[in-house]
Length: 174
Image (cartoon, rainbow, N blue to C red; front, top):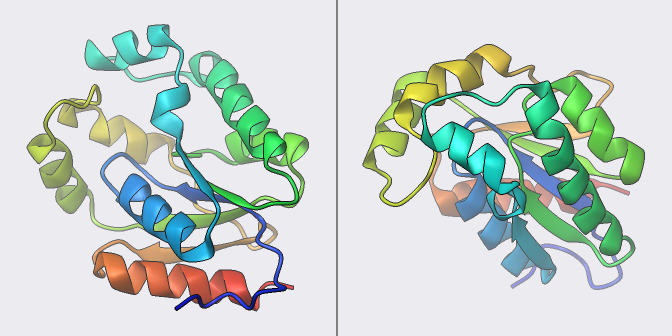
């Protein structure tokens, strides 16, 4: 059963956080719950970014700019119908870039313990992001500030609990 009333407009949503926080899982589940499209931001990375991360080098602001432009374009294509995208959105300036293209975007920050993330990333098979880059993700992370529309959830909760919390929060937005 949907938490969102039928006439409630779903805003564009970015599920953000460091690698291994659960962005793809929670984003997929939330999009299903809200009956909107989902995109894994990893699928919008230019190949050069994937190659750089796979070789153990963190992305810099210049590397992320075209990737964020791809995500912003995807979100803009879904204006008015709602959508969920999984995107690290680690820095305020990255979130600002997304807001420039999609001013009503909201953020769900999955946050928690670095050791948990390192274990999760180490256990992932077939992903280009190595566990050696987890520290660089935490070093880059700028949590949401009070003037940003968003919520921070502890990723240690179950996927169902996180999805419920996120959907309830989205339903509270008017």
